[in-house]
Length: 397
Image (cartoon, rainbow, N blue to C red; front, side, top):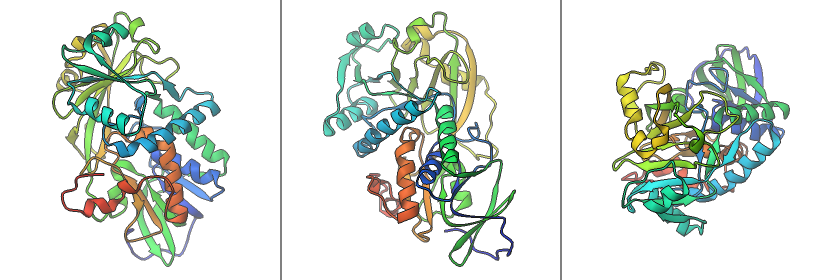
Protein backbone atom coordinates (compact mmCIF):
# COMPACT_ATOMS: atom_id res chain seq x y z
CA UNK A 1 0.00 0.00 0.00
CA UNK A 2 1.38 3.47 -0.80
CA UNK A 3 2.86 5.29 2.14
CA UNK A 4 0.60 7.93 3.62
CA UNK A 5 1.55 11.41 4.62
CA UNK A 6 0.74 15.08 4.25
CA UNK A 7 0.39 16.05 0.60
CA UNK A 8 1.27 19.61 -0.42
CA UNK A 9 -1.65 21.33 -2.11
CA UNK A 10 0.17 22.23 -5.31
CA UNK A 11 -0.07 19.61 -8.07
CA UNK A 12 1.95 20.00 -11.27
CA UNK A 13 0.16 17.40 -13.38
CA UNK A 14 -2.97 15.26 -13.16
CA UNK A 15 -3.60 11.99 -14.98
CA UNK A 16 -5.94 9.04 -14.73
CA UNK A 17 -3.20 6.40 -14.54
CA UNK A 18 0.55 6.45 -13.94
CA UNK A 19 2.87 3.58 -14.87
CA UNK A 20 6.05 3.49 -12.79
CA UNK A 21 8.89 1.87 -14.70
CA UNK A 22 9.19 1.69 -18.48
CA UNK A 23 11.11 -1.52 -18.96
CA UNK A 24 9.50 -4.29 -20.98
CA UNK A 25 6.44 -4.82 -18.78
CA UNK A 26 5.87 -1.16 -17.93
CA UNK A 27 6.23 0.05 -21.50
CA UNK A 28 3.73 -2.60 -22.64
CA UNK A 29 1.23 -1.48 -19.97
CA UNK A 30 1.79 2.17 -20.94
CA UNK A 31 1.07 1.39 -24.61
CA UNK A 32 -1.96 -0.77 -23.80
CA UNK A 33 -3.52 1.94 -21.64
CA UNK A 34 -2.84 4.69 -24.17
CA UNK A 35 -4.38 2.64 -27.00
CA UNK A 36 -7.59 2.48 -24.96
CA UNK A 37 -7.76 6.26 -24.81
CA UNK A 38 -6.72 6.44 -21.14
CA UNK A 39 -4.98 9.56 -19.86
CA UNK A 40 -1.77 7.77 -18.86
CA UNK A 41 1.69 8.98 -17.92
CA UNK A 42 4.74 6.71 -18.00
CA UNK A 43 7.48 7.51 -15.51
CA UNK A 44 11.03 6.19 -15.48
CA UNK A 45 14.08 7.11 -13.44
CA UNK A 46 16.22 6.97 -16.60
CA UNK A 47 15.63 7.37 -20.35
CA UNK A 48 14.33 4.02 -21.66
CA UNK A 49 15.46 1.80 -23.16
CA UNK A 50 18.40 1.79 -20.76
CA UNK A 51 20.80 -0.67 -19.10
CA UNK A 52 20.05 -0.03 -15.42
CA UNK A 53 17.44 -2.73 -14.85
CA UNK A 54 16.45 -6.00 -16.51
CA UNK A 55 15.14 -5.05 -19.96
CA UNK A 56 18.25 -4.75 -22.10
CA UNK A 57 21.07 -6.78 -23.61
CA UNK A 58 20.16 -7.07 -27.32
CA UNK A 59 18.15 -10.30 -27.17
CA UNK A 60 15.65 -12.25 -25.10
CA UNK A 61 14.40 -15.80 -25.64
CA UNK A 62 10.81 -16.37 -26.65
CA UNK A 63 9.37 -19.88 -26.21
CA UNK A 64 5.95 -21.45 -25.81
CA UNK A 65 6.69 -24.93 -24.34
CA UNK A 66 7.33 -23.39 -20.96
CA UNK A 67 9.45 -25.58 -18.71
CA UNK A 68 8.98 -23.38 -15.63
CA UNK A 69 5.31 -24.38 -15.49
CA UNK A 70 2.66 -25.41 -18.07
CA UNK A 71 0.26 -22.70 -16.84
CA UNK A 72 2.36 -20.11 -18.67
CA UNK A 73 1.63 -21.66 -22.07
CA UNK A 74 -1.66 -19.80 -22.83
CA UNK A 75 0.07 -16.51 -22.02
CA UNK A 76 3.01 -17.42 -24.25
CA UNK A 77 0.68 -18.32 -27.12
CA UNK A 78 -1.07 -14.97 -26.83
CA UNK A 79 2.25 -13.14 -26.60
CA UNK A 80 3.50 -14.87 -29.74
CA UNK A 81 0.71 -13.30 -31.77
CA UNK A 82 1.17 -9.87 -30.20
CA UNK A 83 4.95 -9.88 -30.69
CA UNK A 84 4.48 -10.73 -34.34
CA UNK A 85 1.97 -7.92 -34.77
CA UNK A 86 4.31 -5.44 -33.08
CA UNK A 87 7.15 -6.58 -35.34
CA UNK A 88 4.93 -6.20 -38.42
CA UNK A 89 3.94 -2.64 -37.44
CA UNK A 90 7.45 -1.33 -36.84
CA UNK A 91 10.52 -0.84 -39.02
CA UNK A 92 12.96 -2.22 -36.44
CA UNK A 93 13.47 -5.96 -36.07
CA UNK A 94 11.71 -7.00 -32.85
CA UNK A 95 10.75 -10.67 -33.11
CA UNK A 96 12.65 -13.35 -35.04
CA UNK A 97 11.63 -17.02 -35.06
CA UNK A 98 14.73 -19.21 -34.95
CA UNK A 99 13.63 -22.46 -33.33
CA UNK A 100 14.97 -23.57 -29.96
CA UNK A 101 17.11 -26.50 -28.81
CA UNK A 102 17.10 -27.42 -25.10
CA UNK A 103 19.72 -30.03 -24.32
CA UNK A 104 20.35 -32.15 -21.25
CA UNK A 105 19.55 -35.39 -19.50
CA UNK A 106 16.00 -36.65 -20.13
CA UNK A 107 14.96 -35.74 -16.57
CA UNK A 108 16.50 -32.25 -16.38
CA UNK A 109 14.17 -29.28 -16.06
CA UNK A 110 14.72 -27.70 -19.46
CA UNK A 111 13.96 -30.98 -21.26
CA UNK A 112 11.41 -32.68 -18.98
CA UNK A 113 9.63 -29.42 -18.15
CA UNK A 114 9.38 -28.44 -21.80
CA UNK A 115 8.04 -31.87 -22.68
CA UNK A 116 5.43 -31.65 -19.92
CA UNK A 117 4.21 -28.28 -21.18
CA UNK A 118 4.16 -29.46 -24.80
CA UNK A 119 2.27 -32.64 -23.93
CA UNK A 120 -0.28 -30.91 -21.74
CA UNK A 121 -1.02 -28.21 -24.33
CA UNK A 122 -0.57 -30.27 -27.50
CA UNK A 123 2.35 -28.20 -28.80
CA UNK A 124 4.36 -29.26 -31.81
CA UNK A 125 7.82 -30.41 -30.80
CA UNK A 126 10.57 -32.94 -31.46
CA UNK A 127 12.84 -35.02 -29.24
CA UNK A 128 16.26 -35.63 -30.78
CA UNK A 129 19.18 -37.70 -29.56
CA UNK A 130 22.72 -36.31 -29.48
CA UNK A 131 23.60 -37.53 -32.98
CA UNK A 132 20.42 -36.15 -34.56
CA UNK A 133 20.97 -32.81 -32.81
CA UNK A 134 24.52 -32.31 -34.07
CA UNK A 135 23.53 -33.46 -37.56
CA UNK A 136 20.76 -30.85 -37.77
CA UNK A 137 22.83 -28.05 -36.21
CA UNK A 138 26.53 -28.81 -36.76
CA UNK A 139 27.59 -26.01 -34.41
CA UNK A 140 26.08 -27.81 -31.39
CA UNK A 141 27.94 -30.59 -29.54
CA UNK A 142 25.47 -32.26 -27.17
CA UNK A 143 27.00 -34.77 -24.74
CA UNK A 144 26.44 -38.47 -25.27
CA UNK A 145 23.19 -39.65 -23.74
CA UNK A 146 21.59 -36.21 -23.81
CA UNK A 147 18.20 -35.37 -25.29
CA UNK A 148 17.30 -32.26 -27.27
CA UNK A 149 13.81 -30.81 -26.98
CA UNK A 150 13.19 -28.79 -30.14
CA UNK A 151 10.40 -26.26 -30.60
CA UNK A 152 10.18 -24.51 -33.97
CA UNK A 153 8.16 -21.59 -32.56
CA UNK A 154 10.98 -20.48 -30.26
CA UNK A 155 12.64 -17.22 -31.25
CA UNK A 156 14.44 -14.04 -30.27
CA UNK A 157 13.05 -10.69 -29.09
CA UNK A 158 15.17 -7.55 -29.18
CA UNK A 159 14.35 -5.73 -25.91
CA UNK A 160 15.73 -2.33 -26.92
CA UNK A 161 13.75 -2.28 -30.18
CA UNK A 162 10.64 -3.64 -28.45
CA UNK A 163 10.65 -1.02 -25.69
CA UNK A 164 11.30 1.82 -28.13
CA UNK A 165 8.38 0.65 -30.28
CA UNK A 166 5.98 0.24 -27.34
CA UNK A 167 6.81 3.68 -25.95
CA UNK A 168 6.49 5.25 -29.38
CA UNK A 169 3.10 3.62 -29.94
CA UNK A 170 1.95 4.71 -26.49
CA UNK A 171 2.95 8.32 -27.18
CA UNK A 172 1.31 8.28 -30.61
CA UNK A 173 -1.91 7.09 -28.92
CA UNK A 174 -1.81 10.05 -26.52
CA UNK A 175 0.24 8.78 -23.57
CA UNK A 176 2.65 11.19 -21.88
CA UNK A 177 6.14 10.53 -20.55
CA UNK A 178 8.15 11.68 -17.59
CA UNK A 179 11.59 10.14 -18.14
CA UNK A 180 14.75 10.84 -16.14
CA UNK A 181 12.32 11.39 -13.29
CA UNK A 182 12.71 9.73 -9.91
CA UNK A 183 9.72 9.07 -7.69
CA UNK A 184 10.71 10.02 -4.14
CA UNK A 185 7.44 9.42 -2.36
CA UNK A 186 3.95 8.03 -2.94
CA UNK A 187 1.15 9.53 -0.85
CA UNK A 188 -2.62 9.33 -0.57
CA UNK A 189 -5.08 12.20 -0.45
CA UNK A 190 -8.67 11.01 -0.49
CA UNK A 191 -9.18 8.92 -3.60
CA UNK A 192 -6.09 10.33 -5.31
CA UNK A 193 -2.52 9.05 -5.34
CA UNK A 194 0.13 11.75 -5.34
CA UNK A 195 3.62 11.02 -6.65
CA UNK A 196 6.33 13.36 -5.45
CA UNK A 197 9.00 13.27 -8.13
CA UNK A 198 12.17 15.10 -9.07
CA UNK A 199 10.21 16.90 -11.81
CA UNK A 200 7.13 17.87 -9.81
CA UNK A 201 4.05 16.42 -8.13
CA UNK A 202 1.73 14.20 -10.13
CA UNK A 203 -1.79 13.28 -9.03
CA UNK A 204 -3.43 10.13 -10.45
CA UNK A 205 -6.48 8.01 -9.80
CA UNK A 206 -4.72 4.69 -10.37
CA UNK A 207 -1.15 3.46 -10.30
CA UNK A 208 0.66 0.59 -12.03
CA UNK A 209 3.97 -0.32 -10.39
CA UNK A 210 6.31 -2.13 -12.79
CA UNK A 211 9.57 -0.87 -11.38
CA UNK A 212 11.55 -4.11 -11.40
CA UNK A 213 14.26 -4.20 -8.77
CA UNK A 214 12.93 -1.00 -7.18
CA UNK A 215 9.29 -2.12 -6.85
CA UNK A 216 9.24 -2.85 -3.12
CA UNK A 217 11.08 0.41 -2.40
CA UNK A 218 8.24 2.38 -3.96
CA UNK A 219 5.25 0.42 -2.65
CA UNK A 220 4.91 -1.85 0.36
CA UNK A 221 4.05 -5.35 -0.83
CA UNK A 222 2.50 -7.51 1.88
CA UNK A 223 3.44 -11.21 1.62
CA UNK A 224 5.76 -10.51 -1.34
CA UNK A 225 9.48 -10.76 -0.65
CA UNK A 226 11.80 -9.87 -3.51
CA UNK A 227 15.50 -10.59 -3.92
CA UNK A 228 17.57 -8.66 -6.49
CA UNK A 229 20.56 -10.48 -7.98
CA UNK A 230 23.44 -9.59 -10.31
CA UNK A 231 23.53 -11.39 -13.66
CA UNK A 232 26.11 -11.56 -16.45
CA UNK A 233 25.84 -11.41 -20.24
CA UNK A 234 28.72 -12.11 -22.65
CA UNK A 235 29.63 -11.83 -26.34
CA UNK A 236 32.45 -13.68 -28.10
CA UNK A 237 34.01 -13.09 -31.50
CA UNK A 238 34.04 -16.53 -33.15
CA UNK A 239 36.69 -17.45 -35.69
CA UNK A 240 33.98 -18.59 -38.12
CA UNK A 241 30.63 -16.93 -37.47
CA UNK A 242 28.79 -18.53 -40.40
CA UNK A 243 27.50 -21.66 -38.56
CA UNK A 244 26.27 -19.39 -35.77
CA UNK A 245 24.03 -17.07 -37.74
CA UNK A 246 20.22 -17.08 -37.70
CA UNK A 247 18.93 -19.72 -40.05
CA UNK A 248 21.80 -22.06 -39.17
CA UNK A 249 21.71 -21.98 -35.35
CA UNK A 250 18.64 -21.95 -33.10
CA UNK A 251 18.29 -20.38 -29.70
CA UNK A 252 20.05 -22.96 -27.54
CA UNK A 253 20.36 -24.05 -23.92
CA UNK A 254 22.53 -26.67 -22.21
CA UNK A 255 21.63 -27.95 -18.77
CA UNK A 256 24.43 -27.45 -16.23
CA UNK A 257 23.38 -30.46 -14.13
CA UNK A 258 22.45 -28.19 -11.27
CA UNK A 259 20.37 -25.09 -10.66
CA UNK A 260 21.46 -23.33 -13.83
CA UNK A 261 21.69 -23.69 -17.58
CA UNK A 262 23.89 -22.01 -20.17
CA UNK A 263 22.01 -20.45 -23.07
CA UNK A 264 22.60 -18.31 -26.12
CA UNK A 265 21.38 -16.95 -29.41
CA UNK A 266 22.17 -17.11 -33.09
CA UNK A 267 23.79 -14.01 -34.51
CA UNK A 268 20.82 -11.95 -35.69
CA UNK A 269 21.14 -9.22 -38.31
CA UNK A 270 19.84 -5.77 -37.51
CA UNK A 271 19.94 -5.97 -33.71
CA UNK A 272 21.64 -3.10 -31.84
CA UNK A 273 24.48 -3.61 -29.40
CA UNK A 274 27.67 -5.68 -29.40
CA UNK A 275 28.64 -7.85 -32.35
CA UNK A 276 29.38 -11.55 -32.09
CA UNK A 277 27.65 -14.47 -30.40
CA UNK A 278 25.71 -13.63 -27.26
CA UNK A 279 25.44 -16.14 -24.41
CA UNK A 280 24.72 -16.19 -20.69
CA UNK A 281 23.82 -18.48 -17.82
CA UNK A 282 20.41 -18.60 -16.12
CA UNK A 283 20.84 -18.96 -12.36
CA UNK A 284 19.77 -17.19 -9.20
CA UNK A 285 22.92 -15.07 -9.29
CA UNK A 286 24.54 -13.05 -6.52
CA UNK A 287 22.27 -10.94 -4.25
CA UNK A 288 22.85 -7.23 -4.66
CA UNK A 289 21.45 -3.75 -4.14
CA UNK A 290 20.18 -2.33 -7.46
CA UNK A 291 21.65 1.09 -6.67
CA UNK A 292 25.15 -0.13 -5.76
CA UNK A 293 25.52 -3.33 -7.82
CA UNK A 294 28.98 -3.82 -9.30
CA UNK A 295 28.73 -3.15 -13.02
CA UNK A 296 32.37 -3.90 -13.84
CA UNK A 297 33.42 -7.38 -15.05
CA UNK A 298 36.43 -9.16 -13.55
CA UNK A 299 38.36 -12.34 -14.35
CA UNK A 300 36.13 -14.55 -12.23
CA UNK A 301 33.08 -13.24 -14.08
CA UNK A 302 34.70 -14.00 -17.43
CA UNK A 303 35.68 -17.52 -16.38
CA UNK A 304 32.16 -18.28 -15.14
CA UNK A 305 30.62 -16.99 -18.35
CA UNK A 306 32.96 -18.94 -20.63
CA UNK A 307 32.85 -22.23 -18.74
CA UNK A 308 31.76 -25.08 -21.07
CA UNK A 309 31.04 -22.78 -24.02
CA UNK A 310 33.83 -24.04 -26.29
CA UNK A 311 33.04 -27.70 -25.66
CA UNK A 312 29.32 -27.20 -26.25
CA UNK A 313 29.68 -24.92 -29.29
CA UNK A 314 33.22 -25.31 -30.67
CA UNK A 315 32.60 -22.72 -33.40
CA UNK A 316 31.99 -20.13 -30.65
CA UNK A 317 35.57 -20.35 -29.43
CA UNK A 318 37.10 -16.90 -29.57
CA UNK A 319 37.86 -13.89 -27.40
CA UNK A 320 35.27 -12.43 -25.06
CA UNK A 321 34.73 -9.05 -26.65
CA UNK A 322 32.02 -7.63 -24.41
CA UNK A 323 30.33 -8.43 -21.11
CA UNK A 324 27.72 -6.60 -19.09
CA UNK A 325 25.42 -6.97 -16.12
CA UNK A 326 21.67 -6.98 -15.67
CA UNK A 327 19.35 -7.62 -12.74
CA UNK A 328 16.96 -10.38 -11.81
CA UNK A 329 14.23 -9.60 -9.30
CA UNK A 330 13.32 -12.96 -7.80
CA UNK A 331 10.10 -13.82 -6.04
CA UNK A 332 10.24 -16.56 -3.43
CA UNK A 333 8.94 -19.24 -5.80
CA UNK A 334 10.53 -17.72 -8.95
CA UNK A 335 7.13 -16.98 -10.52
CA UNK A 336 5.70 -13.58 -11.40
CA UNK A 337 3.54 -11.41 -9.16
CA UNK A 338 0.66 -9.76 -11.04
CA UNK A 339 -2.26 -8.49 -9.02
CA UNK A 340 -4.30 -5.65 -7.67
CA UNK A 341 -2.65 -4.53 -4.46
CA UNK A 342 -4.34 -6.42 -1.59
CA UNK A 343 -4.65 -3.26 0.52
CA UNK A 344 -5.44 -0.72 -2.19
CA UNK A 345 -7.53 -1.46 -5.30
CA UNK A 346 -6.20 1.69 -6.98
CA UNK A 347 -2.71 0.15 -7.20
CA UNK A 348 -1.73 -2.65 -9.55
CA UNK A 349 1.58 -4.46 -9.05
CA UNK A 350 3.79 -6.31 -11.52
CA UNK A 351 7.07 -7.59 -10.13
CA UNK A 352 9.19 -10.66 -9.38
CA UNK A 353 9.77 -11.64 -13.00
CA UNK A 354 12.74 -13.75 -11.92
CA UNK A 355 14.66 -13.64 -15.19
CA UNK A 356 11.96 -15.10 -17.44
CA UNK A 357 9.32 -12.41 -17.83
CA UNK A 358 10.26 -10.35 -20.90
CA UNK A 359 8.74 -12.77 -23.42
CA UNK A 360 5.28 -12.06 -21.96
CA UNK A 361 5.42 -8.25 -22.18
CA UNK A 362 2.60 -7.58 -24.67
CA UNK A 363 0.02 -9.88 -23.09
CA UNK A 364 0.92 -8.80 -19.56
CA UNK A 365 0.63 -5.18 -20.65
CA UNK A 366 -2.95 -5.90 -21.69
CA UNK A 367 -3.66 -7.75 -18.43
CA UNK A 368 -2.22 -4.90 -16.35
CA UNK A 369 -4.37 -2.39 -18.22
CA UNK A 370 -7.41 -4.54 -17.40
CA UNK A 371 -6.46 -4.77 -13.72
CA UNK A 372 -5.87 -1.03 -13.44
CA UNK A 373 -9.13 -0.06 -15.15
CA UNK A 374 -11.49 -2.87 -14.15
CA UNK A 375 -9.89 -4.69 -11.21
CA UNK A 376 -9.79 -7.99 -13.11
CA UNK A 377 -8.87 -9.53 -16.45
CA UNK A 378 -9.96 -12.34 -18.76
CA UNK A 379 -6.33 -13.32 -19.28
CA UNK A 380 -5.24 -16.41 -17.28
CA UNK A 381 -3.00 -14.79 -14.67
CA UNK A 382 -4.78 -16.01 -11.53
CA UNK A 383 -1.94 -18.42 -10.77
CA UNK A 384 0.38 -15.40 -10.50
CA UNK A 385 -1.60 -13.52 -7.84
CA UNK A 386 0.20 -12.40 -4.70
CA UNK A 387 -2.29 -14.44 -2.64
CA UNK A 388 -0.40 -17.65 -3.45
CA UNK A 389 2.61 -16.33 -1.52
CA UNK A 390 0.57 -16.23 1.68
CA UNK A 391 0.02 -19.97 1.46
CA UNK A 392 2.21 -22.34 3.41
CA UNK A 393 5.08 -23.84 1.52
CA UNK A 394 5.16 -21.27 -1.33
CA UNK A 395 5.19 -24.10 -3.87
CA UNK A 396 4.27 -21.85 -6.79
CA UNK A 397 1.53 -22.15 -9.39
